[in-house]
Image (cartoon, rainbow, N blue to C red):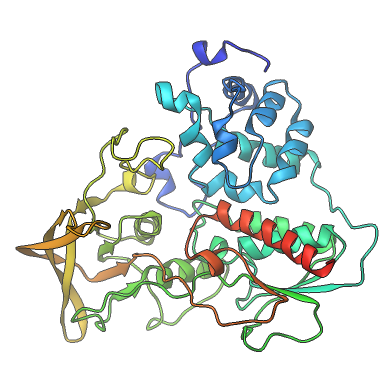
Length: 447
């Protein structure tokens, strides 16, 4: 701990975002960076607590106190060496993780100014690539055993990375045209530029991992010739809204818009009938989570007229929520960079039906709801109030999450990791799951 009093004298300083009028005109990353001096000052605020709640809260078990201390002292190589022990892809988590560590930081629990752990993490990996610390690490010896990984999202990449370093010959099968899973096809470029994934893929291939894209594998008929399999296919089925008018032109799943936009930025083209674009449209986003927020930012960049986001749950309180005290995840109002770009946000609304003319969406009938305690305990009961209205829109995006996949019975050498095992969750949890499954496969093949 280099400066035991820094947290008393140095306030939290976020890197912040590019100006709104600038960033909504392109899909470049919105988040800015601090210079090295300011970043070191922010790292010095870490108190290296006797009981490091940040470490406890991180699914990967990152050693935040150690890499923060190394940053403060200007020892960037040491910081990188500490970080890569636990996190194979900090360039992902450093950009899009909700930072469970910061929610548990003592400085957050006391003065609401946690150490900038996520930004510090991102600065470490970017410095590492810039300075040449990231080099392919090729295993000295292969053990003669082969493992197939089905799905090249965060969990699959984590499994592949870990097993490859153990000496296994790893082949990753991916149904899409490029690796990354939802990190590539679900997360907008303004949050994570896809060159970040390509950069890492170059390293992984140099380390000996083979990627086979455009391979839609049936997990009931896995490719032959492998000693074990890791199924990391995520949660492919989005939650639908089965109400009248769902088949109108203009009603889409959120990922239909998000994945297509990322493909357009990658150079693909789509016909006018295929295009899911918000230009000149009044957009309704149904769902108040991060995917909905991503739709808002994308709609602005495509040139929408307006965006309204509705959520069926109550509006969370700002800053503090007595109902979710630490160590629970704090259910508080989250305002993203996309929200700040312009959005009418509303809560306690359910969608009764979509309204259209000549087969095209023109609006949605919504109704206010109340949530009342369940007399049998458990989840509160939603009660419609009868207060209905029409929200005018010509594009509606369903961003209501994903259904947990039901997996078939498989052979004992087949393992499930990430969202394919748990249902939709965080990238950081997918990485942790992939790491754990790699250990289980290694134990199985060496029992």
